[in-house]
Length: 210
Image 1: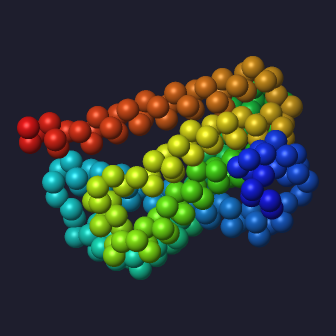
Image 2: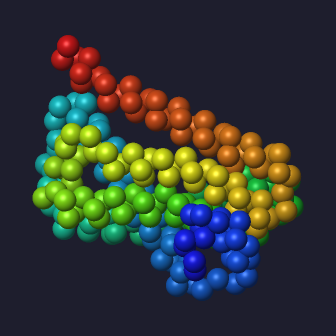
């Protein structure tokens, strides 16, 4: 699997993925996406704790130790991988049908969803890996001024909308206009709304202390 093409030449990547894939790569890719989702849940818990001004003991145990952090990310990532494979993959297939694809293959739709998700999952985990070297714990990284590398992972989330669109229109026979709406426009708008809500949510502690 040439992951470089996924980031710089997604059309080439998905054109090469039409055949029967190596099962090991499918499982590994799903696990990576699941792990990134587990890491995202930790970020959400930290954000909620920051707003409330209180960190639970379990959250501190996870985020004050890199061993605890990565054990949870990769361990719970298995559950998230299964969940995303069936439910998010099913949602991907539904959008394919609404985009004009006639009875798209379930397994192929799920694989395509997981592959396009690697565009934001891999950078997110890479950022966390870099923080592992840079900070004594994930909580220290979270509380550090700027937390700048996370912006890169966030930007890749929006870029994944493009790779999702390219995957849908390359692997499946779809109406390009409909696919443009279902795989690019609406997800990008959704992420923008969620991001705006998060930024507003994060500003509450400053507003309350003003």
